[in-house]
Image 1 (cartoon, rainbow, N blue to C red):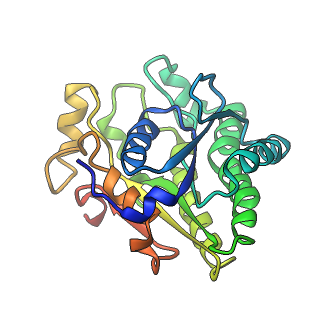
Image 2: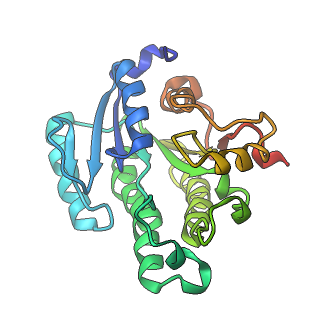
Length: 251
């Protein structure tokens, strides 16, 4: 059961990359707290609260904003969550730095950084005009604070260079935004550690040795910090990065 923040019931919350695994956990928690959740994604969906949008295109974002405003009137919270993902189908060797292509670099930064900046530009600027302002939450990672330890991955597989660059950049965007509309729009980041989700057993053993608590995050364990930052309980928190990683980044 998630912590109930009564003020969330009145909030409209927009999340990018809303059809992904982590986003699905967030959405359940937000809806459990009676938020109106708007999902943006490039994948197709029949969800009633879904809007198809390419967040790397400013024209798409402006168009979808007009449609959202007609239906919801205002957006209280923007969660910049979208990012490219490399699953089991990835070609392992092409992710190594010596083989990393311009195309992958450009595509990843386009979604993870440019997309977050454009969403902040379009939705943040509108929030700044609202009587009650707004709130932006950027999803970073413990690897936005420290470097990935590529020794813990499978042979030929590494954490892509773009992942670290984007997650570090997201924290920079957070600090910049927090001082740009400080009286109307606050902005914070969450740096999540890895979540246990059917990964290779050897990988889990290796990564757990790097975490003082001796384990990866559990499913749904990250939800409450998102709810807290979305609510008025965090009203004086601005420009910070909350780290949820079992202590990995303090070593």
